[in-house]
Amino acid sequence: MKVPHTSAAGLGRWLTLANLASAATALLVASVLLIVFQFLLLRDAMVEDLGVQAHIVSDNSVAALLFNDGRAGTETLNALAASPSIQAAGIFTLGGRQLASYTRGRAAPVAAPAPSLLEAGHRFGVTRMELVRYVDSEDVHIGYVVVRAGLDRLYGRLLGYIGLTLSIAAGSLAAAYLLVRRMRRRVKSAEAHLHYLAHVDPVTGLPNRHAFNERLLFALSRVDRAGGSVGLLLLDLDNFKIVNDTLGHQCGDRLLELVAQRLVDCLRSADVICRIGGDEFAVILESDAGTQGALISAKILAALAEPFAVDVHDIYVTASIGISVYPQDGANLETLIRNADTAMYQAKNKGKNAFELFRPELDQRVQKRLSLEVNLRKALERGELELYYQPQFSLKDGSLVGLEALLRWNHPELGMVSPAEFIPVAEESGLIVPIGRWVLCTACRQVAAWREAGLGDVHVSVNLSARQTKDSQLVEDILEALRETGMSPGQLELEITETVLMENVHANVELLQRLQTEGIRLSIDDFGTGYSSMAYLKRFPIDQVKIDRTFVRDIPGDGDDEAITTAIIAMAHSLGLSVVAEGVETEQQLDFLRKAGCDIMQGYYFAEPGTPERIQAFLRNSTVPTEKIRA
Image 1: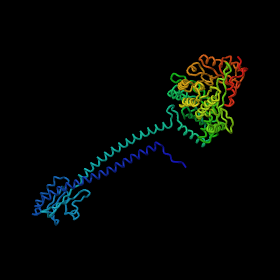
Image 2 (image 1 turned 180 degrees about the vertical axis):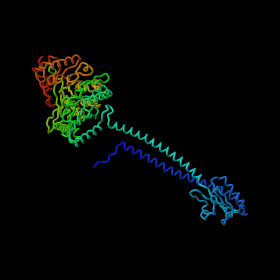
Image 3 (image 1 turned 120 degrees about the vertical axis):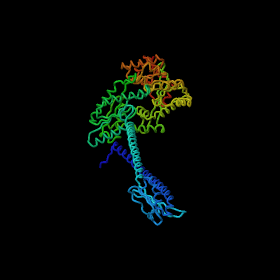
Image 4 (image 1 turned 90 degrees about the horizontal axis):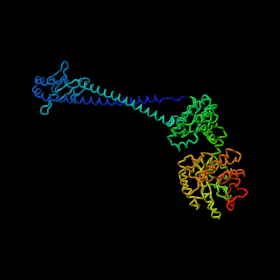
């Protein structure tokens, strides 16, 4: 059964008519009451006026009645000619005999009053009224005067009042109509503005998340009725936060506006694009969704590859896109969106600037990730996290110069979970902050324990994540750990990756300066994988750089990696920084790095990461066998 539908415009007209009808009814009732009230006032005034005149006639008729002088009575009545409303009058004895009479024009003479009139004093007819007054002599009734007046003047005055009242009512109704129309226009304007705010993104002018949900539901219902498919593209701009942090939100908003324009240009007229979040867009493909999703995604990535001119900046933006198709990738809106989101994050995990079609196995990966997060939340409480330590050796004399604390997760059922699996989960979920705090405190306590065991003052390096650098309590947590364990700030080295440093350069420079002021050593981890340059190195107050293992792995033999490694070492030394090479696993790698001037080695060639118990052997004999480091 169809549900009757009333349009907003039709409803507005009915509301206008209802308001006007209510106003008209109120005015009509008020007018009628006023007219009735005015009629009663006029009638009472007429009764009072006739009563006064009848009283005068009564006083002047005493002698005529006492002496039965009809002529004198007639003269008295003739004085009523001055009152145009009086039609006739008469003087009567108590027995009802008429002593004298007066008539105006062709008016009929008055007759002796009926007993009811004598009792009431006056009565009204349709066109006239009659009034009677007794004539008294020494407080004794000797007769009475009857006066009859026409109601023409009363009706005339009443009609004039009715006309005035109706004119005022009509004017009020017209004013009410104009006011209602004006109010209705304002309401419609407010409704339109509210609808705009509810459905349109103010930055890009695109439909927002609310409108996206409505349009996607409509598209899915159309497929349910007529068949076909609907494609959904979820697009997330890669590293957009860096633009906001470095250039400001105004530039960020302008960039979003330009991105939206390019996205619109990439789509067909039937497609719908919406902005559903800060840097997230959604595209609804309502035809040929199964084949067009990948083509349009590729077109979008190509369009975004060109730089965006924002003020004086040329900004490069990439995107990660996830694609799902209804009905095969989801039976309802929520599932379709979730699966597109899953595909989008897979595109990000593949290195960003890519698109990914949803596949069932991707959902399995998401479920695995969720399970991993749930278990990771309990890992700290259950004591499943452990710290391993990997020694670092001086290439100059083979002495052990420090240890890097490496996080390990020993799950009772899953066994040793790879850091490559759980560290990204901890970072995304925010668990990295409490975990990082635990790593820092545990490493400092272990160094204190080794010192108490007579193993000397060991230097330890701890990695900081992106989330930790944004934690307002970070510096206080570090200083508290040092105070609690009695560890010297110079024994602690904090490693931060290039990518993390570049997320918010100004804030990170301030953070590093504060840490350096406290005497803590600072190192750039995975150097060479991000924004490696002399300019960036000069900006950050650091003591050391670590060459990423990806460059060490293929040397010697890979000319590019050899050139990059040599350049990093030379660049760092020119700024007075020491250099650590991680991932050293062969003698050939060691020889190349020694010749290039590298300062410190770390890798399986020297020692694997070990538990605190295993690492004590290196602390008791803190040099590498001489055959491993040859001058």
